[in-house]
Structures are given as structure tokens and as C-alpha cells.
Image 1 (tube, rainbow, N blue to C red):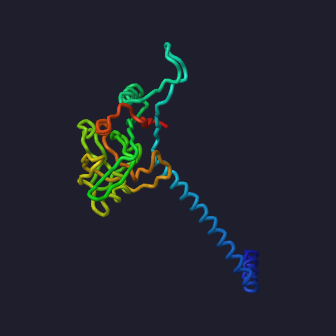
Image 2 (image 1 turned 135 degrees about the vertical axis):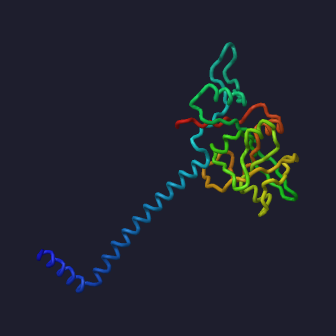
Image 3 (image 1 turned 90 degrees about the vertical axis):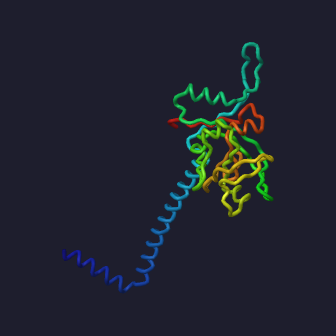
Length: 235
């Protein structure tokens, strides 16, 4: 016990005699600890934001595209084009129980939107209701995403990304308002919440105009889908 007090008294004496060295040493230790803590916090924050950004672009999804055959089949030559249809998505869902969600995806560049004197051009898509969860396109309060009745009845309704909604409507609430898509009236049913998105497919979701796939097919006369988006039950 006496030895401990001896060391304490010696430490206090050295501290009194060499104040400058003690202050510099304590400052260096404190600064080093703070710097390491800040770097670790920055790294964890960056990791969380990157993960969130990737999930906002698509949570556990696969994207199936058409292509070309590489082999001949029953007298048909290789190089035949394979195109996907809505029926392919239905067949996949019914045949593979491991698929949790699936949605055909139509897309069209340079689609013109107009509200009053304001106009915008965007990549419009036609999808099914599961697209909301798969691509994290959640609506702000007072609005909604596309539902099954919209698809069944081919309703002319549209869900807008927050950026293009602000571009067309400014500070005015778009929900319930009517705009023109390629000169045809559509009712705005919802606006997407703001989200961080660093990875994207055909542009950011913030500028997306989303309509029921059946409406899109009828409006633009499409026979084939651009892609089929799939979410498996287990990654």
C-alpha cells in the first residue's frame, strides 16, 4: 500500500515540475483517441449509407431480360431473339414457389408530362403493385402506390417521383390533380418519399412516372416487356 502512495506522490511531483510535457502528452492522447473515434464513426456511417442506397435501388431483386439463343433447335438457327411477356411473369410465379414477388416492367424514354404551362420529360414505366416494395418506392402521406384494381381496370393513374413532382407542381400538392402524359389525362395518386439512391436502373426513381402495367401496354401498344423484376424468398 505504501508503495502505491509512493508512486502516486512521485507522479504528482513530476506533473508539477513538467507541466508542459504533461499537457502535451495528455493532448496528444486525447486527440489520437478522438481522431480514431471519428474515423470509425465516419466509416460506419458511410457503410450504412451505402447499404441504404443500394437497397433503395432494389431490395433483394433479380432482373430478367430477354436475349438471343446460342443453339439451334428443331431446325431453327441460333441467334433467335427471345422476348418476354406478362404471361412469362405469371408462369414463373406459378411454377417457382421460391419467388416471393414478381412484376413485369415496361419502360419508355422521353415520355412527355405536362401540368398547365409546366412540362417535363422522363423515363415512364408500367409495373405491378409489388414494385413498390421491391424498389422501395414508398408514397408520402396522403398518397398511395398502384394497386391491383388499377391494373385490372386499366386506370389512368400515375405515381410520381418527388423530383419530377416538384418540377411540375412546385409547392402545390400533386395528389388528386390531373396532368397530361403524351396528351392523355392521368390522375396523380401519390408522390414518392425522398430517398438516397446512388445505384440506379434507367435513371433515378426521383424522376420516375409510374403507371399500371396494363395502362402502359394499352397506351403505348406494347406486346413485350422490357424486363421482369423478381424477388426471391431467400437471397
